Length: 187
Ligand SMILES: [Zn+2]
Image (cartoon, rainbow, N blue to C red; front, side, top):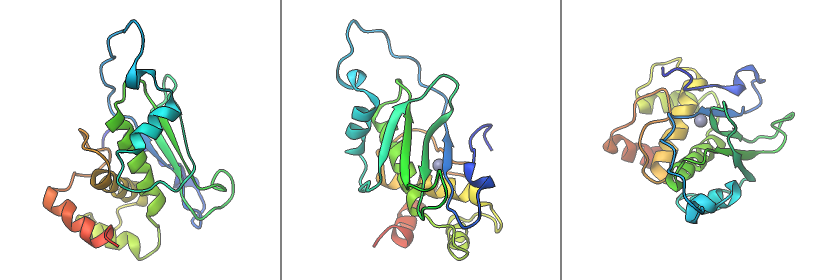
């Protein structure tokens, strides 16, 4: 597993409460050259960047979604608070996106799609084993691993193409992705 690839806020959470799942940052892009005046994407604030990036996600986002700049030292690109609602901070299902100025529109769209994936999956006793089997992951793979895998598969299917694979698993082949889409993501 990549160092720092995964932090699971849900670990200490009660079993009945779907947890907030965190996603560590990939190695940052090189900084953009300084410009005399920011234009286009560079001029957008976090909320405007998220609104623009969401247009690249081929799934609706029905959840309250807030976006802010990532502060120095912060590694997370996003946090999700999936339903069902529970005790704070899980009392309001929602998505939070933390942006770096260097991330592209596609990068931000991928983060939104990844967090949408987390809002969708369940932790029921039957679902986890189904996902593990479909992905060829060992029995007993903990939710901290397979939920990241699920969210990343979701983001790969419904977000724009991006480099890298933001889960402690292997990226599925295109054929495997198509099969997963049919099995899990086709109504
Ligand atoms: Zn995640």
